[in-house]
Length: 240
Image (cartoon, rainbow, N blue to C red; front, side, top):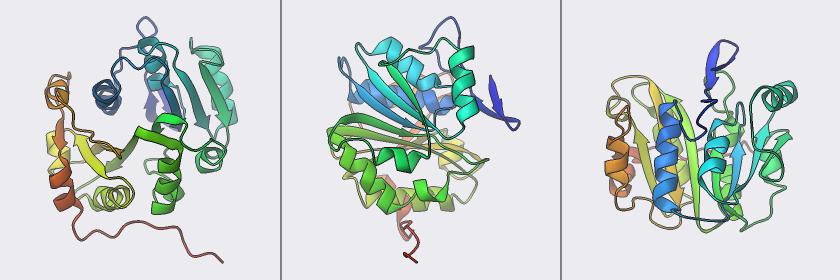
């Protein structure tokens, strides 16, 4: 378990890279398996690296995966390379820098998946939540590419509703995934937004989510519209 300022940030099973312990990572893994089964040349960008647990799992499961993880903390990036058996370059490159700045260096229409899992304390940095940022993500995805965004929220889920509205303003298909009690606004927890220009909710995904060690629910596309109704999409502040 990797702790950052006392907060659980990553967990790696040193004997089994595919085994993920964090529930939201298991949910992301299930979505990726449903949307990109058998993909041989998966190209992934992780905005927020920490221990690179999900990148390590993808490398173990997808043949010839090529991934970049962006981590703002240079010391952390160096230490996880030293501590853990992470895939070496070019299978996994770790870049030190701001997630949005590094995103802009990636060629458009070149990625299969972008994972946003960056936090400052317990919150996602504001500049990684806006419509402008989400548009930059979408531009770098291939037509069937997948955007996975991890967030944490408490009842009444104002943050999650605004983020859902933001992602819906850019992507044609958006679903929300999490533990049922979290999705119903009964307690604090993680919610994963999965978005694409192609349908995300594939055959077997609901069953796969329910079969996880901690069963997860899915809010389908029509329900996400209702979930985000009345919420204002997030935007970059006006230029000075």
